Image 1: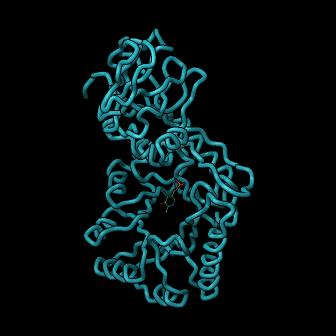
Image 2: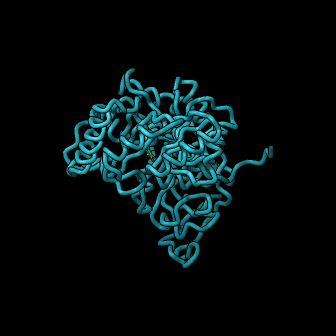
Image 3: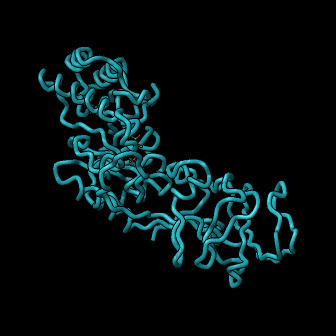
Length: 376
Ligand SMILES: *Cc1c(COP(=O)(O)O)cnc(C)c1O
């Protein structure tokens, strides 16, 4: 391991991850299983370490997107059930069995193929079936009778879960959520009547949990964002938010250089910023290659010595420039906060997302693997 100082790093609070998971569990109660989502390397918080924290808090399930993500957790020793949610490519199916992973199946053909594979290896793996109730992405569009027939004809595979995913849960003025729930409930009723309803039913990600949409909880929920301390704002006539979580991650960058520039100086590529008066500028060791959005050029802010200061000019690949006139004590080697709190100032992922014209999920997932992680 190198002991060189970091140019840019994130600090992740283990205590916050644990507390956020417990807050979800306390809200949904003991009859609803909480399956935290640790896809995309736990929204860049580090899936292996985050999973360890969650399992130590009693999580029994983890959800990831891909077989590759699931294998990384198994190889790091995670003994929990692992649900692979975002589909798997045909050559990956063997690995589902080799690593004892639970796939979400998205079509009745795929269900039959998985059953044949299980038969050829004389094993009886579980799987969950995803229904497209209106998201228009992954999930089967088959009718209830077809689904029932497919379940009845399974030889080896056990259908353990039935799930769907909501398209518009953040918009309480849309009727789409109610329509999706009605479709899911109708299918469940049909399967229950025939005696083939799988034991686990799950629909809710963070927002239906946080805003108390209890009819979407069934007996399992799949929060991702909330585990990391975020709940996106909602639109329309929403009920009060019931879930209290706190961001677990803060992102810092080192100052490489501090210098005084005269009035009229142009800063960075394209001369996008011209100093309106003499300024002290700081050059930060972070850029868009680290995931610091280029769209923050001349727009975003960072926290320097406890105050918000503006980004000057273009964010470049490995560097960004900020105004340190109001933070004269900072020197090369000191750090600033890009995301998080320092003194009385704070910058949230939501705020960065708004300035950069994106969403908070994308800000978090955009933090590059070259940004070091420290668990505190
Ligand atoms: C990512 C994802 C989730 C978690 O969503 P959040 O909004 O982060 O809570 C849940 N279910 C599925 C299918 C997902 O892809």
